[in-house]
Image (cartoon, rainbow, N blue to C red):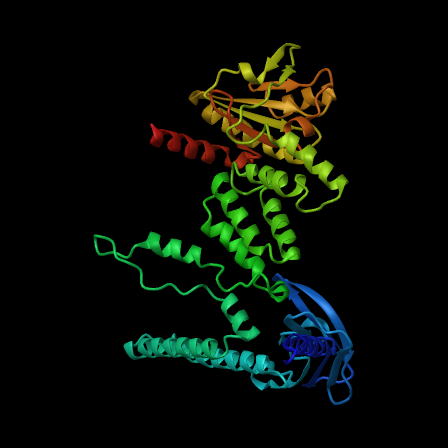
Length: 468
């Protein structure tokens, strides 16, 4: 009887040997650039966005403009760039990791239309696509200057024709890295949406479909996608435009995205860092809770594998932040006023209390104080009070600041016993730092710029009125 097991193992070993040799043969990228001679060029790839460039090799053009990038170890796959001297021009090149011997010729006067590729089906597809796009765009640009119905009809014909061309290219070359990149660079296609009872398009359905299919083109198990310029702009747009900016929604989507990218360890680490970093000092009021959540789940849990020193610093920050988030009651704070009397945040009788942490020697605090004063004068009749709190401990400088900026009518507080670590206790990392509290001393805003106080309170009061 034939030994099928032995035959199968031999075939596996032979296939493995072929695979190993195919992927260990290094790389050779030869470029002849008309218009350059005796000049140095750099080749490298993008990293998550269009501004991050990772150089991989350098080469010098000979007298005929010929450059050879060569190495014994294969380059990682990705979208590569050959940078010209002075970084004024460049050639983009798809390097799939499977085509290791590529040659190209181009004229530096017009790289995209003059380029000729050999040894790379990926780049032939890529540059044919770009040439087709450029041709259509040029004609549309000329037609857009006309206002005739014929010109508009021609524009639609060109756009439809390019759409058909694109679909055909992607369909016929589905297994290529070029096809994957072109899909990653575009939005998901949305089918015809259902109609509402009033006959209008269901825009909510369109939004939900778009969001649900936003990442369809990204194969996160493919490490090459990190070396392209698409991921960071996509994730930035996702959280900015598709996620409701309240902690619960952000956290839900953050966990979803981290789970999606988890097959790629490096991309997961970067994604967790990116999301966490966005919400440490966020642009949207009240979303710092996302930072606390991410810090606890991904860093303090050990999932991200950071050093003990980093973990300790994160833990200290979490300990500070957890009691200072929006919707938390502001911690007890008692200070001394200019007359030597005790003043407590918790005993201030006001519809809204603004806490203004400042340093008398701080330039930004000096600029903000007149704005704060004007805000108070305009709004004090509406039950708004302001407590100005010095974070420094020179009593003369404090009193001088209060007098110079005419803050006497505010509630002024000073740490007379020099016992309060304002940074650790109240997250006053920079000055001025502002908190806004409601009638019950619940935090409704933190790290609020003084110029935005009035707009925020108007918005907040209208929001509360709608809930009644």
